[in-house]
Length: 343
Image 1 (spheres, rainbow, N blue to C red):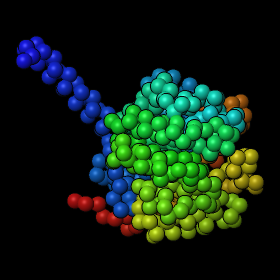
Image 2 (image 1 turned 180 degrees about the vertical axis):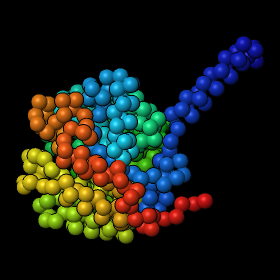
Image 3 (image 1 turned 120 degrees about the vertical axis):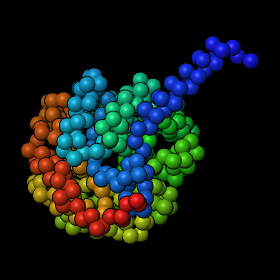
Image 4 (image 1 turned 90 degrees about the vertical axis):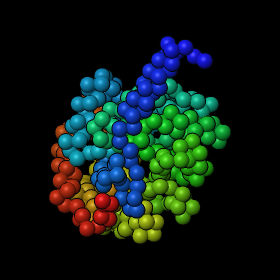
């Protein structure tokens, strides 16, 4: 039998473990029908693209700097950051490099980056924010920067295991690809049955097939952009179709935007009201949005990119106009489109 001192140490260890678990699980995102809930209450899932968050020096300079930026996003109505695990493509995006990825070639994790991700997740949790983590990207895949099948299975299982304590995280399998999506969903669920999983199935206007859409907890398509015409009319039709067919939450995940045509941007000038009209339509349908932009693609020291490499809401008047609209979501949201919360 352990002595009294051993029992005291064991008791203290258990108390510490429970306290740490409770701290890590402050907020939990769940789903009810076509809506998101945070701790059982309706959650207006409203995001911004911050793909380089794990690897950005200014954002991660200190816990205080990270908190200050998160608070700024919150002031603009943003409560979700879309973050990429793989930021190792060779396109010259801000903060990208061959080692800015969570994965070694054998599928094991680069723990210095995983620990940084955990810091971000915890800081976001303290602000009541959610992280949408894209595990793999087509930008890397088509540059032949990819893991083999056993290595990718190992990576998915490993990162899912590392994220177990954090319930304000959703996993997005791919950015704009559908390679072995259902297999990866099964891997995630085998490690963490409660983890919410989604996928961006392809380029703009690709809405996913029945097999993967039925397997996912919610849907995050990249809706049609300017090449489809009046995207503020086309994209809401796509979201409405998905809501009706699959009866689960749908996020307009990387919608039409302004910016360089080099990587999917428009070939003609756009107006902030194009985005506002589309956002309004999505809200009225009961869908959700992630605001996409060009504040990372052309690299540091270019006019489109803030000096910090962070998608600063105040940096560009175009983006600020849209974000000034996003913060008014409650004013324009059709509450009747949402189910009545359980009492």
